[in-house]
Image 1 (cartoon, rainbow, N blue to C red):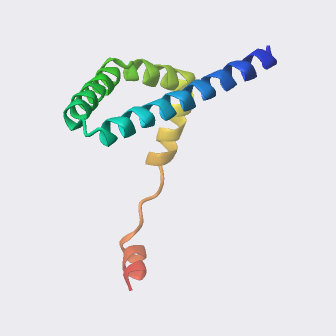
Image 2 (cartoon, rainbow, N blue to C red):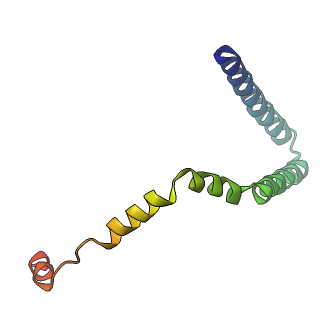
Image 3 (cartoon, helix red, strand yellow):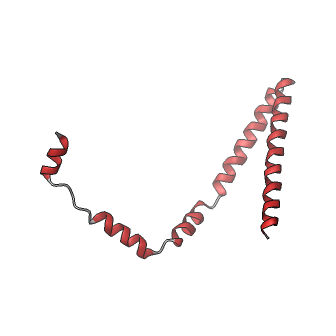
Length: 98
């Protein structure tokens, strides 16, 4: 099981580097042959794709999942500790300011 996870991680890493190298090669080729219009269109489409990925990502579900892992008792205890801290007295404030 552990070996399979390592193999999968290596494949994903390789795939990532292949995409990066391929993208750099395409952009470099378009710049070399002065295809600025095509480069502009491709970059606009890629930005739109990125915005769509962000728009449809389930950030609220992720936050709910993270927040559900902490129990409500812990949150209440932290809130009580934060609100029950003594406030500084006026003399302490004056001493601190001088």
